[in-house]
Image 1 (spheres, rainbow, N blue to C red):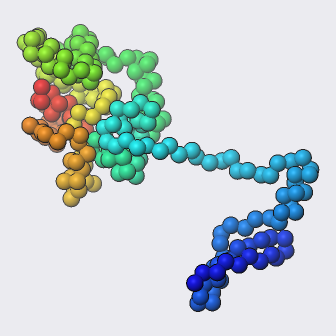
Image 2 (image 1 turned 60 degrees about the horizontal axis):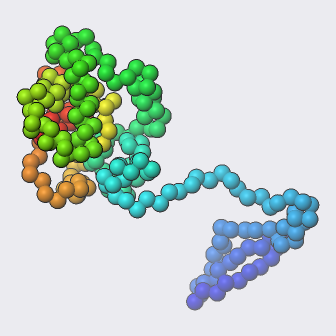
Length: 238
C-alpha cells in the first residue's frame, strides 16, 4: 500500500512516498515555502518561470501525407526517430540533412538557378538548356496532375521521350540532389537489412504493377551516383 506523507524542513517542503516495505522514495520536485512566494509577490516581482523550452508539434499524418503537407514537412531534415514514428523510413534518402544544408541548396538555386549545364554534358550527351526547361515543365506537371501528364505524354511521345529519358535523364540524375521535390520511389541502405519487408508498407499504394530497382552504379555510364540514380527507375516507369 502507498501512503503519501509531506514533511517540512528548513523552509523547503519535500514530498515522500512511503511504501509498505518501509523505505522512503523522494520525488524529484522540491518547492519553496508559500511564505517565500508571498515575499516575492510583495516586492513587485513575479515568480521565476523558465522560458527556455522547445515547442512540440503533434502530427497525426503518416507517410507521404506528411511529405505532401508544407506545414509539417521538413524533407530530409527529419531525424531517424521522426522517420520511424511518422512512417517515413524508406520514403526519404537515408542521409539526414540539417535545415542549414537545405537552406544552402535553396540559396544556390536562388542565386544561380537550376538550369546550369556543364559543358561536358553538351559535348557528350547533347543536353541543352531547352532540354532542362522542358524536363522541369513535365516533371512539375506529373507532381500536380498525373492524369494530364500521361495523356500529354501519349499524344506527344516521340517529342517528349528524349526529355524524360536519354539524354536529359543523365543530367537529371547528376543533379537529382538539387531537383528533388517529392518521393517517386523508395530508398534502402545497408542499415535496412532485415527490415525492408516492413518498410515497403510505408508506400501508399496497395496495388503495384511493376518495380524497377537499381543499386545506383553505372548509371548511363556516368558511374556510381548513389541515391541520385533513382532518376533511372523513375524514368523507366514512364
